[in-house]
Image 1 (cartoon, rainbow, N blue to C red):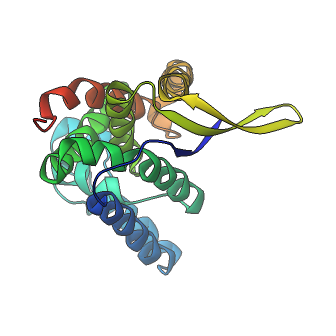
Image 2: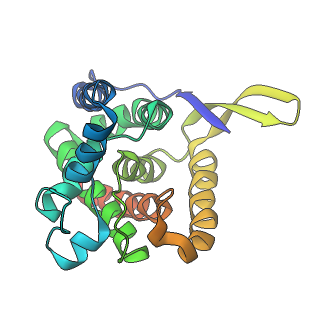
Length: 223
């Protein structure tokens, strides 16, 4: 299943959601023009390395930022065009309604808190990993958790693949995002055996989603 858009209007232009998409795109465009060696150094410097975070000190030769700072900067670095486009699609579809409900200042804080929770989720699953974690997916997972709690019945136009059968179907957000969450957990459990060797940070998605689901009601703007 691939969500394409939702049928859930907002009251205001989602300025911050647009701004976050733009920031991620601009950082990726900068990455795209870097030579290969410089790009590797960039990822080491701005990515979140679990072993650095658990030790609260940089690894020799990483040249990175303070570990806690890298947990924030890593949210804006991506490992490729497909990585970027997939994350921005989910942020664009679901971010506007969460921003609308929380209000702009709360939404920024909420997004960053979910990203930090996601990074911690990955660190717990792979504390000794020296592979940098990058991408906005952890913070966006928090947005998904918030969305499913606030708008479980909202219709999401979803591209469904069943063999040769491909069709766009309106499905409840609770179903679409519930299936997404289960997939993260099911993929994450077997990956624990190889967590220190890199790959998809499944438990960053899980941690971000749970943080968003739990935090959103506490941070919701009074109506």
